[in-house]
Length: 395
Image (tube, rainbow, N blue to C red; front, side):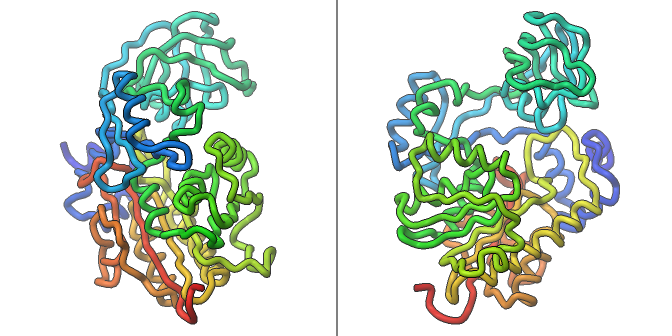
């Protein structure tokens, strides 16, 4: 299949495609084909504040789940993804927005806020779920009345019974309810490991919601020390607050604030380590039904990301660590932002103890960063860079 055909099927704009070709060259077709599929394994993080991987795996085995311990991180368990399956059109149609449709494709139920429009079905009747381009991602039973105009309502809308990919119902069992696990991709877990948070330290997570990395860092610190978790969306921070309670984490202090102004709004805040996991174009997220990002959005994200790094360099202590991560694939949001941090902010790019991805692209200095490329790894596309601020010891 040609690059142009694959790009057309998942609706990449030509200029966006050119950015990916700039990064991946003749590998671009394999990258695009990979992001259309789910990885073969799905990662969950064991909450070692309450249990261990052996106990979690015993629970999963009793559920009939095929899983294994990660060879990279002791707190990660990898679960086999079933599929892809063909889902038949049965009943009336429900059209979901992109994120909701992709979640359903991976086995999730459909909630009312994710619905764009519906046929006139009856409650309790069969429906099938598609994205806006009529890709069928799942089917099940309708639980609420059809959407009327813009009144989406709240709560569970479709109880799915068949989806393109299938995973165990994590959120319906003892493992989840007792705070023993949290769903999180392996590259996201590695990001927290690369930061190397230590018990008793002061950590800043600049773009924390929905909270996976902040919660993981608290776990790595033995829940000792202080993690300042900032995000501009209080609604998204509610997920962090809820998970902290469920997982038994007490060391996170949550603030609804724009982290681009922390040096001004919190002038006494100084951190031993800072995590910058800013909004990005998310081109590495998989599986992907289609791509609606534009080049203008990619470049806008890159400018936005620089603002967070500039503040991170101001609030981290001398000798302190800054880690930058994204779930995207372009050099504009990855290596070019690293170059800005080194050349404009004076941060020193460092090696990473855990290496799973390939080195960053381009200049030899970028070899200290790592890329998780979908054509090489059964993981989401990801990027991690680690910096140290010069000027004194971290203590």
